[in-house]
Length: 617
Image (cartoon, rainbow, N blue to C red; front, side, top):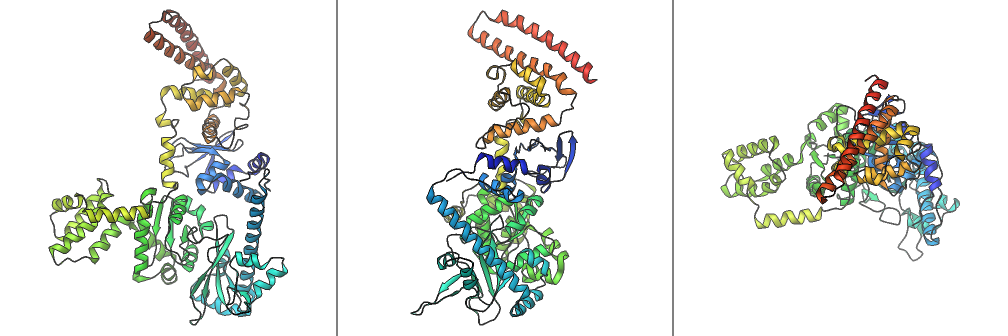
């Protein structure tokens, strides 16, 4: 697949206002001449440990270890790959991307997809104009008004209306230069079953809900009938070259940023449910788009936030969707909660009847999924016989198997004991026992059904910590010295260049990541540390981002004064390692090394005294 040119990537990076970009996720405040700080958007914290360098356009969190550049920031906060992050930023900044030479077939396929997206986009705009300008759409406007949906909210979701005529989209698209084949490929037209096979618009006399990807590009439509005799009630775009049912969530393009800020995403079923929730001040809401919940959609939820609140209908289908969600979320470390909708209402009805306050109350009263499932089993079970109570215990064992020893487990055990009229100690014993073979098989099948692959946001911070030995709480004293030295070099590049020249990265650095960073900076990159780093090298990008942000936090007067101190500490550590190795080998070099250590130690103490005097320490 063809790649975008390096020049394109550089133009996008140069065009991004990094403070503005990061401020969409967290509030920033100035923390130095070339640094800003704020609460980390990638983990919960109460005091700021997240910093950015707006000039070099890198970030680092000293709490969870999240780090990178403008592209990494979008990848992590939006849950997308590098290519999509680049394209999103290019769209945001109005930069045209250029591609390297690509295979002619790939180029043709890309151009065709772009034309199909263009066709869908212009058709969506046509439907939207029809809704607000066409007399025929009066019935649609009345319906939406009865649902309590305001015009500005509907416009944000680009809701439209397909006229009842047979060929409005067909004729207009032909005049615009689109072929019948392209109209078929997007699902906008179909052919009649008669001998003549007349081609006509697929969507007619329906309210149109555009189905978009995370970049807001229209991929297809959900269409709602207005009259009882119209069948089916909902008619969606079928799978085609552009749209794939079950891969997307309705409203994700509008909800993603809000979900990232809130740390949670709310999942509804219908289009109007999502629109009503946004209107009620809950913009971190997305919808299922009329499909059964799929692994791809759970992956999308995981990329948006670590907590998912299920606000699904109270009917059987909604209850089953919740169980399906729990199975699919099991391996993604998602916290799953259930929003109980009063009186069997759907979210749109709740908004209409009780307003934003009713929605806020319902969301605030959400319960962990394990509690919801426990209540469901206890409500549906047979309490009148010992056999019925045994069956309930059997059903609840897999639920309790997911709960570590905790206050929640104690509370739920107490509730089960009370409902089943069992001593609490016996209830704990029964619930902790291994599940029967049939129950284990059932759980295995459910787990396999939900075993979607992919990387969720909930696992991101855990994996980041595991892969990030440079986080402050995990630094060895030796690596801390190495990191501080390199940050000082970046903060005072002229002095840093001389100090780095006196060291050998292979000898003086024990951390492989910092050794790579030292070699990179030593090659004349202190003034612009991020220049010359391959985008495909996230490890080096990450450690340099950390060093740049750390350098921005240093007082400007401290860097030159402390450089010699830190350099000599590295030299002392290197001599200590050589002494240990010489002793292990029985080498006669130990005496010479010990004398050298005394000399360096004396020089270190003198440099430290000078540094204290110069910085007023």
